Image (cartoon, rainbow, N blue to C red):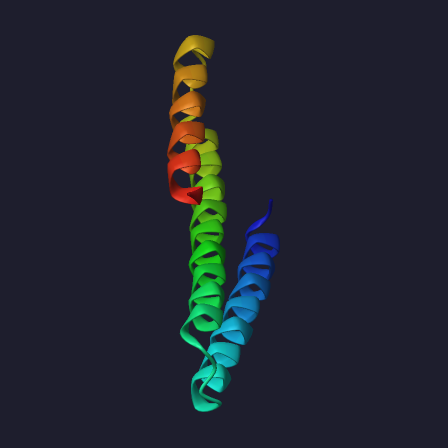
Length: 91
């Protein structure tokens, strides 16, 4: 993914998150029940975690490219570590 593609993707995801937060603000103003608000907060938390994972994944890919690791075994271990970190971030 190019830097411009990543930037556009991140901006789109942030727009979605902003929309969710604005919706939560409206729910609070309208005195919606706590359960509904908590569900929406959970959605925002998930969206932020996915955005973090998206950025981390692209950063890790860029770092691996820049490092130009030629040892396939070392590269595979780093890729596996990255995948594990992404799994943890996405939760």
